[in-house]
Image 1 (cartoon, chains in turn purple, cyan):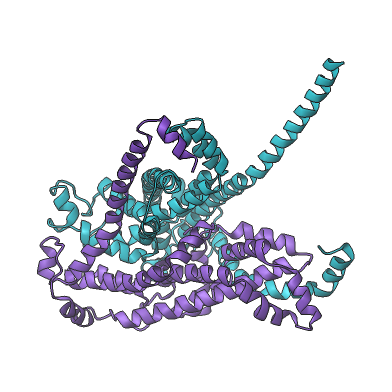
Image 2 (cartoon, chains in turn purple, red):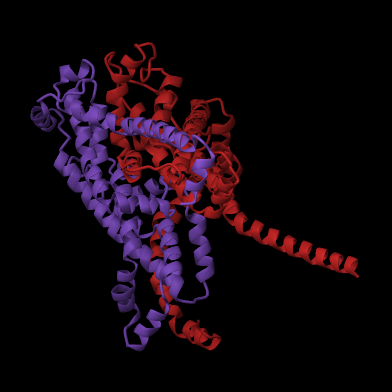
Length: 293
Length: 337
């Protein structure tokens, strides 16, 4: 590197850099602790009895986790960790699948074909990309009530077919890295349009599909707002993970603090595991201008 | 690429597939998003029992808007309080978040600082963003809870009432801290990709010319990051206006009434979701939604303006430069003769 030649000229340049590196590291370590310690403290709380948990915090885990787990099942009549995980999984997985498949399909339609309304349709997608959920939710609830669709998973899952932001991302991805000639080739070989899309373009779009599927999964897993809107009666076997957490937190005044902490901790584990294995994808996706919010 | 004849053939024979491929998106969008949006607009100009003399479903014009913006009822005071809270919490979380993210992004992209474990730090700092907001709220409730032994109370020697009934600024600070905690990693990564998009040779030139780190930052990085920072600002603002989960979780508790934490989104939610069907104020809620929509639409338009601006300015600059060059050439030519 060319820097080396400067080092001799400027006395202390290297020393200054070293000092700066040390400073940077100290800040980074503090931030890392700020990110991780709350989660660790939560884990410790989850292993303690309620009276221990109320009496301050500790860095040493106790041995009450199993008892807390049993208590969660008994004391909180609506809390069933496994059912919550199952329901959230059903919703998040089907949403992620539908979102990437149909967004990919829409993007494919917009990129590959020429048709009259192509321009206006793309402008429409751009325009509605930022409409907040909260704005539509009054009308959404009215519609669900009229159609008798509250307390059903349909309004939680089906709308994920239309995800403007993901269509936009997929379109940009296709424009930059999808060779359209291959479609011509497939046509000449006698493949019909849908087969070309499914057997040729989806495999080629795998990286984009994967990143967007992960984001959609996490987003739906975390989406307390819509879930609490739609599942208005809060039936035990329909409640999702965030709803269960909220239920546990609500009944917090006459409840077990250790068990509370455990309920929150259990809800963090699945996402944290996914994150640990897929962090490279996720961070790459954010950097690629993926999804904010 | 395709000749005009080819593309004409393409447009004739395959156009219908274009419509088929985009049809599911538009059908679902119209049913589940556009129709509810239009319903919201319609509900906002209809009575819901609160407007004197109007029964449910009557057209009341802008009475709902008037009530929440200028009225004398609780709907008005609540809305104004919630709007202020939303702005305060957003500003209080965005400024430190942007400062921190920018500092980290600059450090992470500075080639001169050797930084083993960079990937690890990035992964850890983004992590809070993927945890369910409900869980994050629960996590911080155990840390900042009312118990005099909770972490925050020990740290501050029980001098501040963080999340007790009636807390105002301290409770808002808790939400701001949580928001920063959840989002700084995300903003940092976005800014990093922005910095990496800056032409490497500019930094090299600055280094050769002997610019210090802070000079490089203020004179090169910051001006060139302006677009992406404005984009971050506006998208964060749109997100901030929708803030719901964290304040809602911290508020919604039978023992603590932290009404000072309520945001506009919570206002909307409470008016049409709480209580029984008969007591729900659909009109008020819809009017607040429409106001939120208008503000978001303005911010969204600004996002597009900023995004588009970059190319337009570049083109403009080039055109001016060309005109200048042409003029100078003409002038120079004149002098040389």
